[in-house]
Length: 111
Image (tube, rainbow, N blue to C red):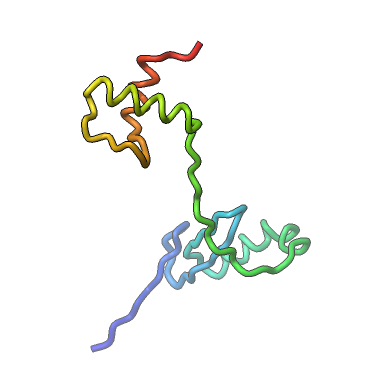
């Protein structure tokens, strides 16, 4: 018994498609296209491909999240939270849970 794999186009559902990869900004995409659909995509992107430079796909950059608060504000939030006794397990270091920060902001609205 033989098994045949048929890849269908993501656009039309037509058989005999192949995977095409393309990138915009820092985002890479894959789509299964027939040969005709692939040529159409290349035609649409033709003037950009002609002027562009070939490159290797960039490695994904790690997303760094910076706190929206200063160290002084975090100390105020932590002191307030421990004083309310609503968060007895809040540590004196590390990340402050979002719900604690939200409750602090609600109790201390900014002018």
